[in-house]
Image (tube, rainbow, N blue to C red; front, top):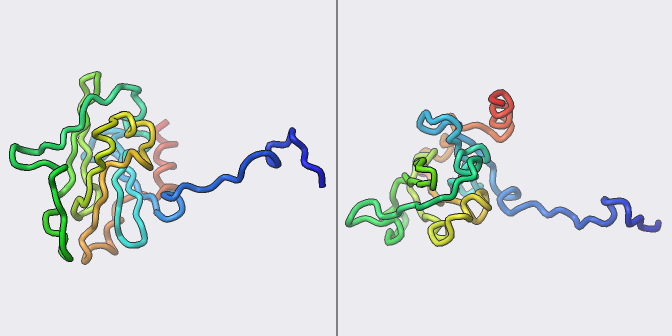
Length: 173
């Protein structure tokens, strides 16, 4: 069999799925806190750990506006960046609520969609704000969260599967 260079199936490199697509199940929450289109995507690993990201339809990703800041200083004595989580019971873990300020004056709140504790805030998005918009489901994730163990089986109740979310998006447009 001779390869045909005109046939893209024979010249294209095999597509390797993203790590997130291979090992995580994507869950969605539409209209977080009642805000239209402020949707979140929550990839969940089989070990219960969840990652908070913005869904494709979120205004921060759709508007084209520049992100001006994402403050992590919660109060004078509390900074997400200085937070240390330790031990079996994850002492020091915080609940997630982040603000995103855009250049057009809009302000968006990113909250946890699962009950649990924020284990890590992605420092990369603080140093390079554009990565949140450029790669929202990979390097631009917002936080890693650990759901409460006793609730880990029920954390996805009320969340949408990827197929359900896509159906909601089709109905909206």
